[in-house]
Length: 438
Image (cartoon, rainbow, N blue to C red):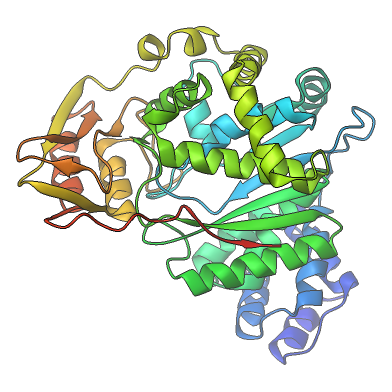
């Protein structure tokens, strides 16, 4: 088989076979196909979008381009994971994985790093000193068998074709292709060896897909493709026009996670609501629970009786960090040494805090990265004292910003100020979960 023939076939709008997708994926994974031919292939797929059947074939091919995790020998419990398309303050996974693991399922949660205004789960976990996210496969198995939960980064052997094609999509202007997005996301999850998958597809200024209809189309494509791969799947379409929770930034978000699992739901009611909704849906799609309301009540019980917090403490210890992170979050998750307070410029109601602008302000503070080579300041970030709907007087604190550099602090504060809108009228409350796609 020749790559040029595959490229020409797709360029002419023809349907590719499983063997052809396997050939491309193996070549991308092993480095036997040059970047210029892989780039031409991606552009052909962009100009002649993959059919639903082709999307399934490409997903399978990328998933099988390396090894796959197999938990069938480790546990007979259902295996379930969750994927979010990313947002600002979206540290749900940090609390979700240990919580759901208390519900009679195994949660092998493979996560990524943040880039741009959206944060990454691995970066948040690494704000805990010595927390190990590069877990060898044998230790993932061991931890799942013992705890039912492990949070880890993509291993070198899992879907290596996706790593190559993902980097080339960014360089070739083919990022927006929905079938390529679907194949990229699902190939990693399919290789992960789970039975069930919950998708959190966000919409709004801080989301990858800003328009609701685009998010809806992506959610439907993900669910449809996942089911054709044999996965139990549903998607929640969730609001990301404003930051989720009160914390933006790595140590900040870990501190909020601990407080939430301690039962302090008032610290961030929107975060708590989405946490329970996602946890309940994961239990239902896995088959561990049949009724969504009962699953939600069970998850709330696991928080209230301390089981979820104990599971987080165990996971932290198993992965090399100190349980002091749970026992003393205020003392353990240190904020950066410099801080600035953003005060309400007038009386009224906080009508809106734009998620993307707030997220980019956090990047300026040092909490995120513009390139994968950038270093992160784990203590940098933003704590929102007020959220949309809250009444304020002139001079009230809306947010506290943290940084380790005066210039970064000033730039972050100036940009954050542009994200806040105050009005005389109280804004209409927004729904966190807009739709459920089954």
